[in-house]
Length: 111
Length: 113
Image (cartoon, rainbow over all chains, first blue to last red; front, side, top):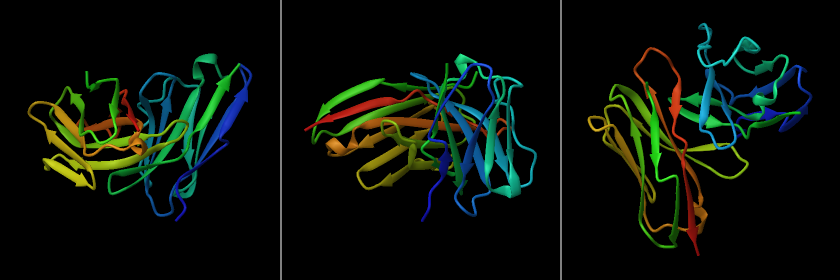
């Protein structure tokens, strides 16, 4: 069956521009995570969605980062006024019974 | 501070060897622990999930153990193959009221043919 998909796969942007990253989870998965993986670093938790509950935003690094999940399915991570330190791979995962299924990631480069 | 540490950072072994990857965590109050593999340029693939109440999980040539009292988990790979070459990550969900996982920085494994 279809796995988690993310788009775009690569994004190059200029400093100061806004970007939107999309995640399509596996159908029926109610929980969704966003992570950031910087070069040589581990995965950094950003935000967690579970059903209709309020999201856990405790990992968002600044107020330039926001995310939403519409209809309990597709999620969008938005980064406003991008900075060079935002360059990283952004991964999302949906879960079934605690097992996380990851998408291939979006590689973001801020010039 | 809740942390996850993986040792070694990199490992190179000849094909056929049995090997052990280590994961340490700082707080024994965990909900579960997961092992993943990550191939270059790709997302993560879940290998094994160990609930807090379990001591080990097995899948094929992989066996993961959990010792909460010592804050350790090990991933045992039997009869390693070149296709096992990847970065192996462990992640811990703590019983701290949040849903986030804390990831280690991984062990980069290379199995030589």
